[in-house]
Amino acid sequence: MKRALFREAINTLKQTGVRMTPQRFAILEYLSKSDLHPTADEIFKALENDFPSMSVATVYNNLRVFKETGLVKELNYGDASSRFDFAAHDHYHILCQKCGKIVDFQYPGLDSVEDVAARLTGFQVASHRLEIYGDCPNCLS
Image (cartoon, rainbow, N blue to C red; front, side, top):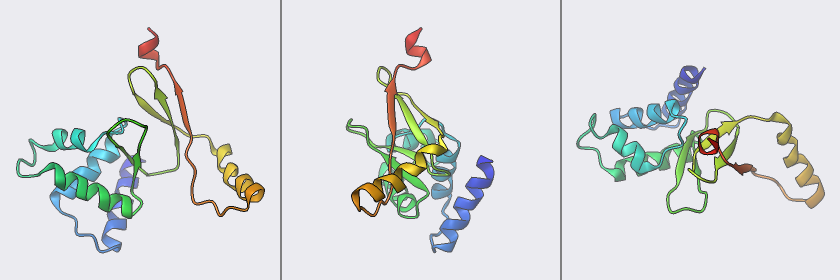
C-alpha cells in the first residue's frame, strides 16, 4: 500500500509541474518509508552518504515543496524542531512524553468532529489535529 501511495505522490508532483530530481525522489521516498516522523536534519543525515553534495537547505526546500503540494505535513510539538510526516492518509498521533516517540493511528469516527465544530461555532473548518500523550511500551519497561 505504501508503494502505491508513493507512486501517487510522484504523479502529484509531476502534475503540479515539480521536476523530480534524484534528491527530491530520495527525500520523498525516505519519508514514505519512515514511521519515525523525522526532522529535516535526520533526513539529511540519512541521505548524506548517497548525496554528498546535498545540503540541509536542499532538504528544507524540498520539504517546503512537499508541504505546498499536500504530500507532507509538518508536525510541531513545542520543541525547537519540526518533524515531517508523509501525508498518505489522514491519521492521528500518539506521543511518548518520556522519549518523544510518535506513532500513527487511525480512528475514522473523529472525522465527524469537524462537522460538529462547524455547526456549533459557525466556523468554516479547514482541518483538525489530534494528539494523545502517554508513555510508550519501551519507556514503561
